[in-house]
Image (cartoon, rainbow, N blue to C red; front, top):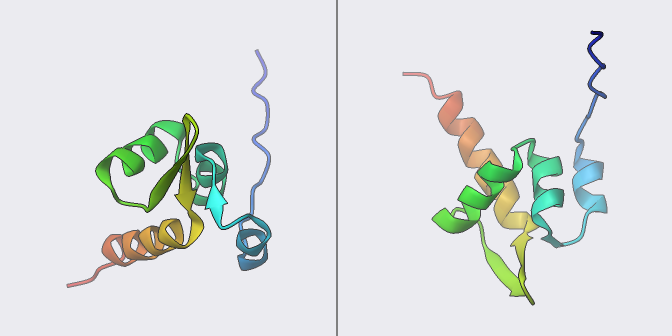
Amino acid sequence: MMLQPVPLRIITPIVWLEFPDWLTPAQASYLSGHDADTVLWLIKDGSVETRRDGDAWLIEKASLYEFQEALAEVLHWST
């Protein structure tokens, strides 16, 4: 069996700007690199700002960005 290559995904500030201010979980997953389960956990945990659109959750892009920035600080914290 031959493994299929994973397409290279580069998320730049321009890519962030091209997405709407309110993201679907799939869009949030794409931008953040987190899998769908992690994005749902972020919603349930209140780690990102959300709103409902009918039955679907929408995630505020700015709050996802702020979460990513805070996560990067924690992961690269040096004592």
